[in-house]
Length: 415
Image (cartoon, rainbow, N blue to C red; front, top):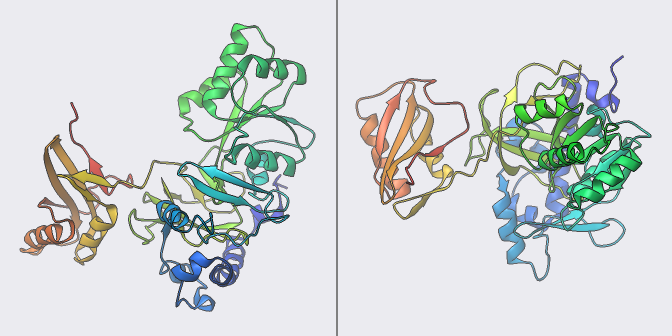
C-alpha cells in the first residue's frame, strides 16, 4: 500500500481523465457567468461542448501580460480585472500583490492552493515543525506554504525573510523538522550555522521554490543531511506540480488541467516536446481557463516510480516569452507561428537573430517534410509580410532543431 496524501494520486488514469473532462464544461460555464473577463474572452463558446482536450485547445489562451492589461484597464472599479468570481468578505480572506502590480484574491477553505499534496510527497508529516522563510509581505508565497503545512498537520514558525542570526537562534531552540523558502536562503542559513557552530541538525528536509535548484546545490544540501524537494506553484493557480521521492520529474496536481503548447500559440505539442505550460484550474473562486504561465516545460512519458499515476512534467525549463527587438521592431513568437502555419510542409520553425548590435541578421530556420522548389522564396515573402522585416530562410531536415522550446533565439553579440 503506497503512502499518498489521498486516494486521488493512485487513481486509474482513465478515471482521472474522465473526471477532469466532466468538470471542464461546468468550469467554463462558471467562468463565463461569474468572471466578467471570461464573459468576454469566451463569448460565443458553448460550454457544454468543451468536454475534451481537443475542444479545450480551441479556446483562446490568456497570458499573464493580458491579465495585467485587463486589471489596469478597469482598476478603479475592479482591481482583479474581471477574472475573480469572489467578493470581499469571508470568502476572500486575503488579497495579494505580485510585481506589475498584479492583484490576486485568496479564496476560503482548507488549503486553498492545494499545497498539502506537495508537502506530503516531500515527507512532511503531522506533528512536525516547519520553519517558513518565505516572505509574509504582500506576496502569497509564505501563506501558500503555510496552508499546505497545516493541511498535513504541521505547526509553522513564520520566520519570513532576513534577520539570519535570529532565525538561527530560533532554529537551534525550536528544533524545526523542515524548512520552506528559497534554496539560496537555506544555503545561507546552513553556512552561517556552521560558522557559528549553531546546531540545526533537527532540520532534515526542505521544500524550496521561487528559484532554480541546480543538481549541484541539491547535492550540497544532501551532503549536509538535508533532503530538498521542489514544488511548482503560482499565485494565480496554486500548485501545478511537485517532486516525489523518486526525483524523476514533477507529478501534476489533481485539481488542474495542464497543456503544453507551442510558445506564442495555443497549439498543444507532442509528448516530450518543450513548450509553454498552460493551465485550466478547477478553482471556483479564480476560474482561470487556459491560463498561459509563461513557463517552459515538457510532458514526461510513463508514470512516477512512487506509483502516483498522474502525468509528469520535466519541471521548469525557462521562460516562454521570447519577444525580441530586431532592427527597431518587436518580433513575437506568435508571428513566427503565423508564418509556419501558412505552409503545410513546415513542421517546426525557429527565428535566430545574430550579428552585432545595429547590424542584426534574421534567419528563419525551418524543419520541412518536403521542400518544393519555391518554398524558400515563399517563406521569405511571408517573413516580410508578417514581421515587416527581411530575413533569410534555412531549410532543415525534420528533427534538426533543438527541443528547448525556443521559437526566437537571440544569438547576437553584445560586446
